[in-house]
Length: 253
Image (cartoon, rainbow, N blue to C red):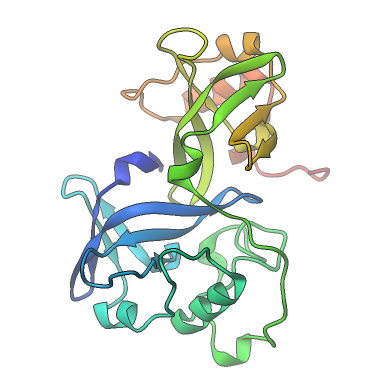
């Protein structure tokens, strides 16, 4: 199922033995554009501490109750590796975090979840599954809240800004950026796949697309009331003459 990240803002977080706070943000990696952590606001419970929860620990989201259930106890979260709220996430922290919870590494492979295409392929790790903690690549975690302010540039000029993200809850992959084009013409929102992005300037807070303003203007409109279904996605991909992610990879990809 596809859902918007902003719909999950301020959802209550319920562990196996009680509530711990609410959702504050999500961190995604800028290589696979996949959510790696939910950031929890625990209020006065764990002050000055950034609490990160992997999608491996998330059980289910309940829309009517505005609640996400977590397959962890409050004690497990309290005793988890400490991360100062003002400090960025380091690879060593991620290694310690994975060791503590027994969750697989998402890095170290070419697939979305390491050597697996979905997170359900990864098994819980034992101490014997971990090799020596060698340095495995660079860290590329980004904040959903921060990137939601980035400007969008087409091949022939600026066209709008990122407003939200649409995520696949099976893989936690970001399928689309919701782009508000009111900077250029009033009212219309469109969807852009991360795979259509030419480059991102993280320092300049800009996303560049290999698409013209005319092509984006003619794209199927997205509305907040719209039902995200496969027919809409097919029409969107056909408009840009792009292969749908649901069709899988080809041999030359």
